[in-house]
Image: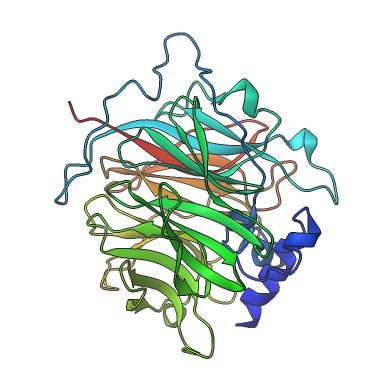
Length: 381
């Protein structure tokens, strides 16, 4: 679709190392505050690729270490999701934003209420990163940076490159864990093929699961399906744009939830609820306008579409994107991007919305430009 292809070109024009990145045309949307900025935002999260060298133990007195809870197996049935731990997210310093200079985000963690936000690790402070993702047991973080997909323990003591971005690789990003913690799904342009890939967490068995232009993926609670937003190649299905439920074993599309007939255009990746009963995603109006911007919920069968948030910002200057469920399934953390200094429409502040009541609570404020949250799962004990 022309709108997406223009988005990919615009977003990639901002990425450094042009010898590797300038030709990529499709990546994850993190978000947009005007029609032109909407286009650029459609690819922002998954293309961001600068990185994190080492996470270290930098927590203020009295705050819990993220590795303190004992890892527990992921629930084998819907429901037992565990308690809510730290929120990992990306922060861009607006004072560093310069025209023509690639944006650099850094990895932070905060308490579930947004307090005590700290940058992880002295060693990481010179190493930008994007797209953090807590493992199901809350003991590891996957993230992207220049060079590939990485995994670190929760304290940042050991960091491993899972998928390297070697010659022929045009970009990797947006990792997501399988429920058992054994596999990562991610977006990549590898070996001349672009789309949704999977790899074992030890770096083995790399394979292309689904070719297409997608946003950040997420797994179903049972590990059978991977949800992803975007579109498949026109040659496969000229009308296939929306939310895809892809079989994790074969890459076959089990269902496409078409949103354009409902007047919506997706601007961020998908997040699957812990019980498996809802998909959350960020959207705007189908024509790129903001009348219907917000975080939405829909059942995996495509029914019960529900608008959860309405951006409280001036028209054409704000939208909500990047939803991530809390482990207890009661809240969703998301980015609300508006007119803050230095924003390109992809970052702003983090908010949490109560799924039942719709009550919204701000988590981060101030000059820092935040996005891309992931919520750590703790033991239920």
